[in-house]
Image (cartoon, rainbow, N blue to C red; front, side, top):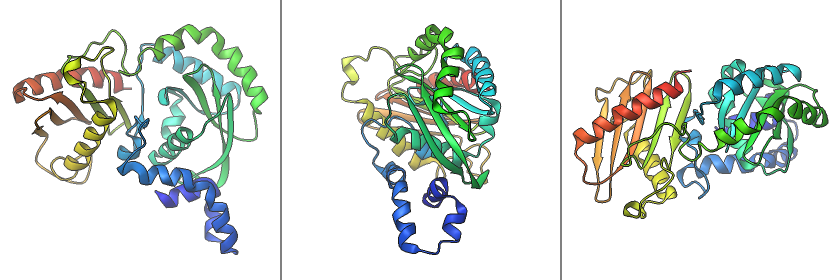
Length: 315
């Protein structure tokens, strides 16, 4: 990961053919924030809600408007001369062009981590190398805010300029503001508002290993009761991350992996909460529940969540 990060910022040629080590060390300072984020995976910052650094899969938000967004995004990307584009809502990918998903997982992860570290008012224009697809020829990573919580992200060449991009954003997205506001309302559950999960689902992480995407929420209900107030979003995130690191590769295998562990299901019960992991087809599903629930109840609720999540992640 650290090596890919150096390639991501400087390119493979700069690293392989370095003549001046002191100059290289100075140039590598630009990598430090992203490397820190990778190393902080063991102890993420408090506002970090994503799981991409843990799973290496793209964090997504699922909304009823996804198909409309994909149509607008494809036309918008074509108008500015690129096939690589994504729409992000609250830092999670809500729609993307077909070619965006052809990027390697490590490249999608590097982009997501970079954008999570950048703070900007309107636009961002950053030269990057794609460690797998294009380690020697740079792309421009261009991002533009549409609303306070939504932005478009593109991989392109010398054009368009940020000024031209702003014009195209206004032309294609001004009629979609109402749809964007509706999709933004899916956060923090990150699923359509008409899908209601059981109140005992305190948080969840669903991974589609075939599509290389993950869907998660630390607060799947708009109102959280006082009964579980001791489980803050940060605490729930840490529990799920620890659970993932504990069971994946030791008790259960990721779908499609080379490991052949027999178990497809894991239960863990603690004083204040219970955990359930299930491998189903191409999905790994992790759910945090309150304590005191029987395993057969957890299993029944996991089936409901599995049905919901697989519907949202099937494309």
